[in-house]
Every structure is written in C-alpha cells, then in structure tokens.
Figure: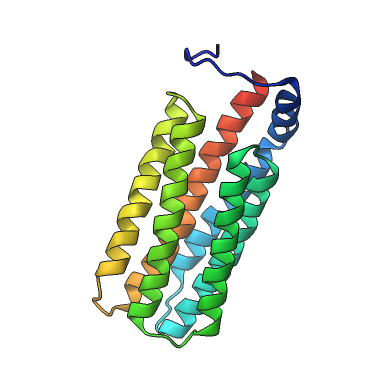
Length: 193
C-alpha cells in the first residue's frame, strides 16, 4: 500500500525499471525549462503570416514528438504505447505543418485542434492513472482539461486572426512546460520514496 491508501502490485523487475527511470527525473525538469523558454520566445515575436506560424508549429510539434519519445523510455507498460502513439501523432502533425505551410487559417487551426485534443486527453489519462490523489494530479488534470477546451476552440473558431495561431502555439509550449515540471517533481518523489 502506498502513502495514499492505494494498493499497487509491482514485480521486482518493474520496481527496478521504475527506480532506473526515476533517477533521471531532472530530464523532465530540463525539458520543462526549455518549453518555458520556447513559450516566451513565441509570445515575443510577431508572426504575421500563416505560413510562418505553420513552420513554427511544425518545429514545436517535432520538439513535442522528441519529448514524448523520451517519455517512452521513462515509463512502463501501456504508458509506453500511449507515449509512442502520441510521439508518432506529433511527427505526423509536424510534417503536415511543413508540407502545407501556406495553408489557410482554418487548416492550421484544425491541425492545432488535433494536437490539443490528443495531448489534453493523454495529460488527463496520465494525471488520473499515475498520481493517485496527490496534489501532483490536480494541476496536470486541469492543464489537460484546458488543452482539450483549447482544441475544441481551435476547431470551431474561425476569426481569421493570425495572432490566435501564435497564442495557440505559445499555449502549447506553456502547457508542456508546466506539465513537464510537475511530472519531474512527481518522478522525483517516487525516486525518493
């Protein structure tokens, strides 16, 4: 039984894998800091064309895919499959953004909506499935809900304003930063226990 009252059955092999992965908790902290820096950079620049924002979104998607690929190696069981599928999804979204950089506002907003809905869903699943009633569960859960709501907003709002695309890309980086920092400290807590 863990400190929250949830019984967990972990084999010695799984415990060794978890301990090995938890040693690198600081990698999530570093990626969180990088995402935070990227969000500041995104919000500071003025992107006035949809094609420039599309290229920026493609870069962010490839970075997100790399982060999710890192999660494949620091997780176990079905979570590896989930992170792997998310990484593949982000690579596909990045390629779509690069292939059609001169697309319309509606097309790029549609691609961004897929990102927010997939990532928000995974963030909600991770927060419910991994943190069992700790305060680490609530912030990622709220961020996941916000991502899903942003996804539906991006899918349905066609105000044709490029600044919204920049805000959505910045929101992607900012939510990734917050999620990675919280996950880093949750992993550190597991490592210390």
